[in-house]
Amino acid sequence: MSPTRASPLLAAGLATAYWFGGDLERAAEMADLALDIGEALAIRKA
Amino acid sequence: MLLDRGLLVLEGSVYRLTGPIDALEVPETLHALIAAPSRRLSAEERRLLQDAAVLGKTFTKEGLGAVSGLEETQLEPLLRRPHAQGGPRRAGRPPLAGARPVRISYRISSGTSPTRRCRSAIGARATWLQPTIWRPRSRADVDEVVEVIASHYVDAFEAARTPRMPQRSKQKAQTMLVRAASAPSSLGASSEAQRYFEQAAGLNRRRRRTGRPAQPGRRDGLVRRRSRHCARLLAESIALHESAGDTHAAARVSGRLGRVDAFTGHRDEALARMERAFAVILGR
Image (cartoon, rainbow over all chains, first blue to last red; front, side):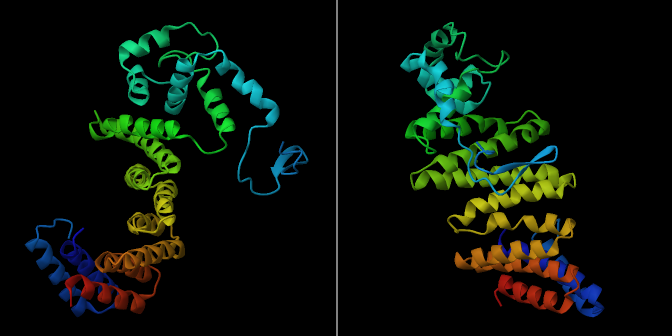
């Protein structure tokens, strides 16, 4: 997996971690970032 | 024997091992008995039998041809010779009677190290079997043979001596082992899957070049709640990637280790680890 393709998955993981930690604002930010990168790269899994 | 050496003791009505047994050797008293059937064969037949033994108890004519390098016209007369004891038999008939003894006696005569001919035959066997993986008729075909192919490549890796051959066999063995793990993993048999992943990673431990095979074990470790073991594997994978200079791969695995941290309640550590990994991957 290329570094670029790994980034949305990692961002999604961070979003989950922030969500369960109660930091909803940061979680939403990371989820948006994950979606943006994932959509740009057409990575359905992200 | 094991009893004589005190490695096996009778406790009540059962036998128990008293410690680990590194190697089981055929007793010297049985060497002659094992080698006897092969003495009745010609040199040509014995060589063919050795090749057949590499394939297993049963084999096809095509497989034997691929491993021995003989054309069908050369094989046919050899296979038709009436050796009631020790003669090779084709698939669909009773198991090859002489193959195992020859292989065992071969090992006895040359210690535990196969000769170049045997190593070459093991490699040829794995190569001949491989097309059944890449051009399968169905998913079931793949599931049925992938473990066998993997074990053949592991054999080839173990037997190989030249610098290039082990590397090729190792990569193929790891690919097959990881593939063999996918079926039990998808069925929730995470213990079985983890065994394959760790076997693949174990091939790397001898030469420590890349940490990739250790990585897939993380998911099954999580499923089994063996988070500590899982974290250890991931940390090992990170160290291997870093020692190979692949910082991005190390960061990806680090991100997964962060998920394990989060899963086990170490939220702050998890976030810090994942943020660091994310920064590396984005090149910040």
